[in-house]
Image 1 (cartoon, helix red, strand yellow):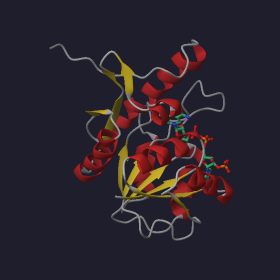
Image 2: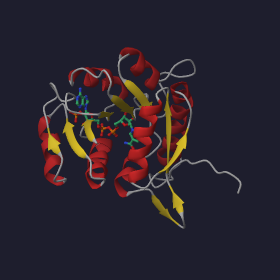
Image 3: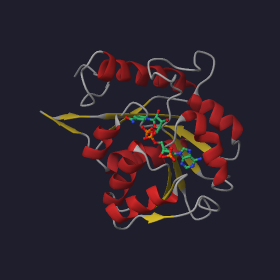
Image 4: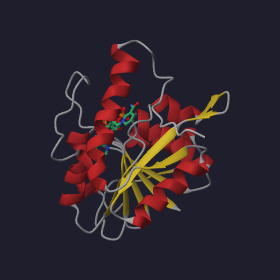
Length: 210
Ligand SMILES: NC(=O)c1ccc[n+]([C@@H]2O[C@H](COP(=O)([O-])OP(=O)(O)OC[C@H]3O[C@@H](n4cnc5c(N)ncnc54)[C@H](OP(=O)(O)O)[C@@H]3O)[C@@H](O)[C@H]2O)c1
């Protein structure tokens, strides 16, 4: 698949690394193009592209910016009608210890509302960047989960295929409305990782009795 990653920070870099490894055609854009170019050098096969028109050849767009920047970043890459948009954002407060929206909406729903032609899927928001970069194998048969929520079956399938191809277990979390649960779940993960000091080598999952 032809995947555009917007953002060359922690999650953007981890996505570029894993998507190239997964054999996708990867392009990456950033506010500062030099950061995207550095990623293209680090992960041969990825191409750094300016934001203008970057979505034109993409089937899938991963928005890997802060939530506050996400809509502007998505609009900067051109028309997204018919594209799958993977929203990994968490609408975090400045100290990362709370959410700025929730209960009656979510980052994913706000993005979908603003881009009615796009097929938005919430995914990967509960996976810390080092976990995404290093891979889903936690040892002892444990695999990290990616929760996917979308109103588009195609978008859910695309995000699931991407996650499974790089080794993650996929948990179907239902419609996009359930991003209202996934974003606080990421908040708990952040609290446990940083607030409670467990570090970033953790990930939430769901157990099912055999
Ligand atoms: N880090 C994690 O472990 C983690 C885990 C799950 C989900 N998330 C979510 O993933 C998103 C990204 O997190 P991160 O940790 O990767 O943040 P980050 O390291 O701060 O990277 C964000 C990147 O987005 C870029 N950006 C901002 N506006 C842009 C625009 N208009 N066009 C293109 N690029 C733009 C920033 O550019 P500049 O460098 O120019 O500022 C920066 O490189 C956040 O919403 C976060 O909540 C993060």
